[in-house]
Image 1 (cartoon, rainbow, N blue to C red):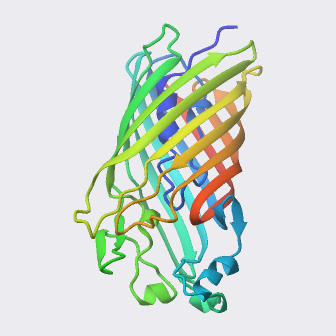
Image 2 (tube, one colour; image 1 turned 90 degrees about the vertical axis):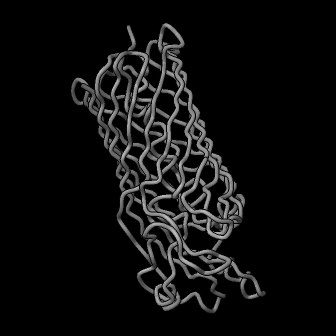
Image 3 (tube, helix red, strand yellow; image 1 turned 60 degrees about the vertical axis):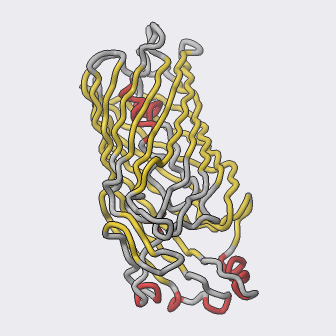
Length: 348
């Protein structure tokens, strides 16, 4: 049985999720969409629409889960620890890619972010009451990504390299932890609770964009391992190289991120393609006077079962559930118990 090979147009999507969620270290943002969207050997256009749901409802530190009362107890003893309540993230990302031939691909991703966040701020255990809960929400465009891939290294086109850039197109900013001054481009503010009364913005990591220009580097390899099974591995590294906020006292630099995914696809049926991915994510701490430097780094491993359904020639849909099997988070962070991803892809 002849297998089509993995194109750069599919690889282009591997960076779609990891760069979207900024509200915690590694919040289920590491699904490898190349395997999810399927394989194609021909040049042409590809349009993808992906939806992701990430409900951060569990406080964690290191490898353990914590209650809000346990974190608030730090403040009972004179600490200054934020006690976060919940963050719900929804992402809809439109991806458009063009392959002039089997070796090159060029694409763009346009994300739309919907986020609801609530926090008790620096509450003590006696202050974990509804009247001390502040919340904010928004729906807005995020940071656009431009990507190029080359897969002419092997005759099979199964090995590819990728380079890209994330642009600071989304709203960004926050409040300087040293001066209290609000900086950035139209940052989102709290809409209810004590933080709204004081005119406080959402954390910089919760804004639609980061205000940074990031370089993205990636690579992948794909190989059939039997008549019915395909295996793949890919990696990606993203680093901020410039920032729109200038000055030592008014900056935010998102932590560098690294993602590695590997898995298998069961290709026995021409219509239904079950698969299992293992996604490993590592994020360094955010930096700068607008950053939460102590509560933003971490390493997470996800098991991600899913299925792709080929509806017609060039048209497919897919759905995945990501379940964390290991996590180590610096400081105290909100974390999801699971995440969901669904998408539709059309190649022509």
